[in-house]
Image (cartoon, rainbow, N blue to C red; front, top):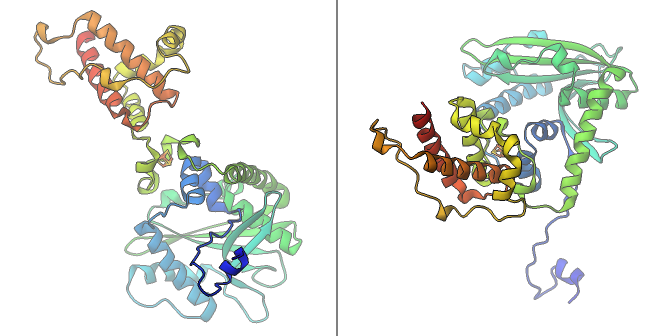
Length: 365
Ligand code: SF4
């Protein structure tokens, strides 16, 4: 039986599920995620791990839908729900579509770029301005719980992926060399308020920011087409783990040990900080202990972690030789960790390092 017959469901043929070949395209939100943490982007876009929508995201989607109904059908968002109040907030600050003026609500675009297509959805778009006689106007509704998240004009003009991409798309489509952007922020509270952020962008002004997006798209495409399925080989950024309510891929990412070490460093309590800062000086000696091609340390052979309790009696303290050995062990483990050769079972490394740091503090302090 030919493949064609199988696919066309010839009688008696087995049911075959054929995975659609996936086409690479990119978007402003992909660029933002990739910049936050390349590995997070990899989980979402390459491994296609599902990501639950946060309550804030779900709320924003409802507000968007209500505004869409208003602009598309003139249906006023009525009622006392928080979503309706937010959707109504500041509506008079936005231009209303008038007869004879071209406008688009939730306008999807797929736009050719030097790196495949960029896709997106513009909330409200007037290709020739709200009066139908001027430059393109791009409007985006934003819902946030805190005014601190509102982006200023200069934020939007200098490197923001969404404003850069939407500007270029609008200018390419209309032939205009300038575009008006209007980001309408709705601040969610009992009585919602709004912050309108307006700016005009020229092509020259958005070229750099857009070029940076294209450059990131190129990196994403390289990873996408490499066939790599191993998240551990993708760069990561620990600063993003706690953002937006916590990364949903933490379990699979296996960076909790690094996160703990990072926390310990930030705690500034001295012990591990001192160990890490001494690395450069001791690099050569340490490389003898843990040569670059050595296997990960055998943690089962490690000494049991000392008890954290502090009796204060001299006899309960580890000897100086013991401390020196432990210090070397921790240095070797951390060095190996930094080289990325300790796997998830190295939880013990961190516990051990914490305990030793505690003992060191006690002995030295
Ligand atoms: S857990 Fe942290 S490092 Fe891992 S993918 Fe998420 S943000 Fe990136």
